[in-house]
Amino acid sequence: MSKIIERIPLPSPTPGTRRELTLHRYGEAGARPKAYLQGSLHADETPGMLTLCHLVDRLDGAAAGRIRGEIVVVPAANPIGMSQALLGNHLGRYEAASGGNFNRGFFSLAPRAIELLEGRLGADPEANKQAVRAALAQALDEVPATGELAALRKILMGQAIDADIVLDCHCDLEALMHLYLGSDLWPDGRDLAAQIGSAATLLAIEAGDNPFDEIFSATWHRLAAHFGSERPIPPGALSATIEYRGQADVDDAVAAGDADNLYRFLARRGLIDDEAGPLPELATEARPLEATALLHAPVPGIVVYRKRLGDAVSAGELIAEIVDPMADRPNAARVPVVSETDGFLLSRLVQKFARRGAVVGKVCGERPLPSRRGTLLED
Image (tube, rainbow, N blue to C red; front, side):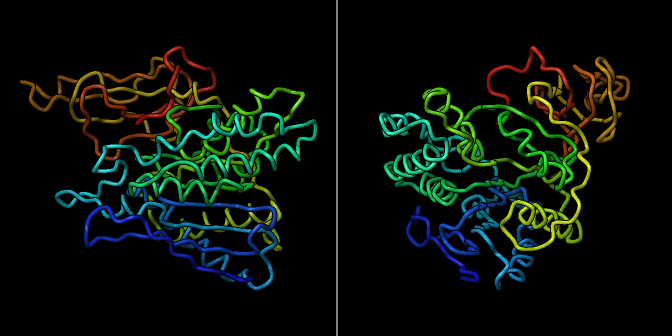
């Protein structure tokens, strides 16, 4: 098989409307290893979408005989979010009908999988892996999904449920390239971080609220913890979220380079019979997600940054000032935003205006912070 383009319709939410997903399939169905890549689950985050469009071009050139496993690419994973706009502004992070974040609330399969796996696991990790994949597929098949968003989630999960590599391509507001990864997937994911040029790799077993990538990492961790060492369950997939810099970083040359890096990563992992080339040096060692400080605006106003992306900062150092444009002397009415930790500035706002309490930046540190407990992701 060289390539198949598949279009999967979503259930119509209202009369006269219809949306569909487009999937690019390479290699033989069921071949190993399998990689699943999707872009723009947050539909207004377009850098990853363009990167996967370029990757499709690269894979099209390799399809005639070079694909050694199975590769599924979905450049635009959220046709619902792509269609949403209000007064000229694209609204792709939340579903307008429910207010739900498109990358939260994916179905929790572990409880049902545990029921299905009782009495079926032994001492062979590889046999257990196959049993877990079958149980998760059955658990997903049993999930009712009548609405459009639920159907979208079920379709996406179904495409990735048996993959060895799952890459969910997003972007931040204004940021350096970075990577979210399960703690137990490091250092296995070291080659991915190095190849894509990640400035930061942020590790957590569960960041909270069931984002897409954790369905294929944290779920396996929960199952392994439940069944214990006598019935060992290895990680099911290298599942990661790649943050392709910021929303404004949409550039053909940059995206083509990012696609080349994904192609080399897939070749190195045995999915493509092609030269991967030398592995680039890793920019920084992985760090716990709990060590990344969120900078909150103490007051509303204009955000004036004093640090650029990548700048090294110390705890207590000034990162930005908030200007109150309605004060008697606006430039004198500045409130500082300081770093909670030593590290470097990873992300900033695109629109330099903030409401009180808004996150205006992230500082990537090395030591877990007392303030970072529970759900670690912003909504």
